[in-house]
Amino acid sequence: MESIRLFNPETQTSFEKLEKLTILPDINELAISFEKENFFNLIPSNAIVWAEDTRYAAEVAGRVSTRFRQDSTDEARDEVYGNLYIDEAEYFDTLKKYKNVEFR
Image 1 (cartoon, rainbow, N blue to C red):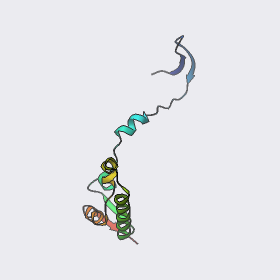
Image 2 (cartoon, rainbow, N blue to C red):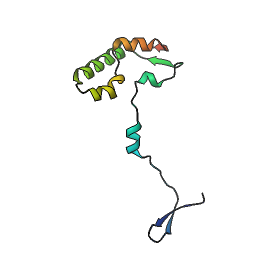
Image 3 (cartoon, rainbow, N blue to C red):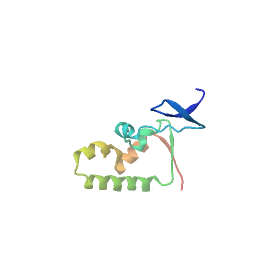
Image 4 (cartoon, rainbow, N blue to C red):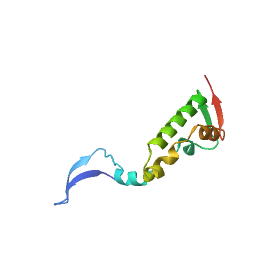
């Protein structure tokens, strides 16, 4: 590609040469195909998880999971977001699958 130019669609003549061009994704299509995932599903199985306070993180995960389940009455919403929230026990079970380092 030698150049990018603006043109008049009616006359098909170019009238300005562009120095740069930003191409944006089709966000409407992206929203349709975007999948939401639990954080642990996104990190590789050989990852090392560094955490400052795993007990506190598990408690927060449990509270958020409980709140979601209490507030959720919409089955379609559960289907989309339900796998994002894990309770305290699931948090610890999932964490055991990784090498982890806890520091304080």
